[in-house]
Amino acid sequence: MQSYPSKLLEQAVNELAKLPGIGRKTALRMALHLLKRNIADVEAMGNSIIRMRSDIIYCRECRNISDQELCAICSNPKRDHSLICVVEDIRDVMAIENTGQYNGVYHVLGGIISPMNGIGPQELHIDALIGRVNEVNATEVILALPATIEGDTTNFYLFRKLTGFNLVLSTIARGISIGDELEHTDEVTLGRSILNRTPYESVVTRK
Amino acid sequence: MQSYPSKLLEQAVNELAKLPGIGRKTALRMALHLLKRNIADVEAMGNSIIRMRSDIIYCRECRNISDQELCAICSNPKRDHSLICVVEDIRDVMAIENTGQYNGVYHVLGGIISPMNGIGPQELHIDALIGRVNEVNATEVILALPATIEGDTTNFYLFRKLTGFNLVLSTIARGISIGDELEHTDEVTLGRSILNRTPYESVVTRK
Image 1 (cartoon, rainbow over the protein chains, first blue to last red):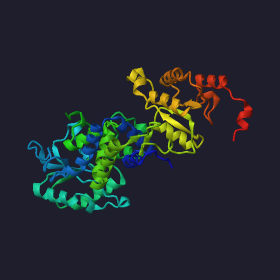
Image 2: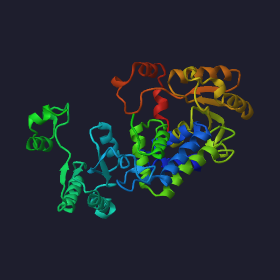
Image 3: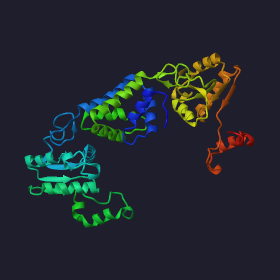
Image 4: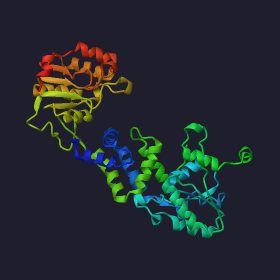
């Protein structure tokens, strides 16, 4: 066990080491870096973290992180509010927005069903999704969850909850990444890419 | 440029991305992790960083980080106060303390001379070192600075400042790391390890 010359330093290292992917050595490097910066900068950093945690709002429609009660996407009248893309967290929203290919709205679950981590459907914003689908008369729900066992479980749970509604339920396409070699692709992905093959015509005519 | 759904989140990401070795993606992951923790935990983290920066004290003798005016090493009467080991920063103190092989005291320069980064002798605690050497009648000063051009420059500067004092000036041994293969060692290190060879007798009789 490393001994620190100062309790204040040790506490700061302990706190920084709680960040994901940060070990004690990196935390110490960060702490020493902070000591070299001026007090106002360090206060700005500490306070911005605290302010973010205490003041952030989740959009009452899609549960995305927001500064207002209704996020910029949900309050945009140009977006198709009957097309809802279900994602795990806000990073997925940012990734899909970056593609510039999607004009619908989102629904952020805040996680996926994972019995191993004690996350059941109650912990997620699933009831809010069902309510929303009902309210806005959604025409399509796209499931854009990770291709893992937890993602598949969540997909299946949502599939059962959403049958009976008059809507199209789809999932994002799984296949070979653009630029990837077939021989280096795992066999499950390759197998699915053959099962879910796309008519060539629809690929070449897509804008 | 990534657009964030919330200004508060964006500010926190900007601040976290100022930490050394942290890019914007990692900073975002950290911020989302903090949003999932409870408010008290995040406040504890933010405040511990601010408190560390504003309340930390540097030992008036060795300039090491400390909670008191005199650090635990400098106030320990069992340590040899006439033997001073000069290091770049507090991590070096911690590393040498961990070996359990050193019973003298330290002097933390707070950096090394680096004209490229605008760090001259005035920015470092060199005058304090000279004053200390004078005051305690130091018998030996060990230079334990990095084996880089900046380290060598600083060594040479200290060598010139300390000639005239009646003391032994030494540097830590440079050589092949224990467990390293000769063939994989760079030629400068290997060359020095031959020039600075140690009598075998002194190795086997060392406790």
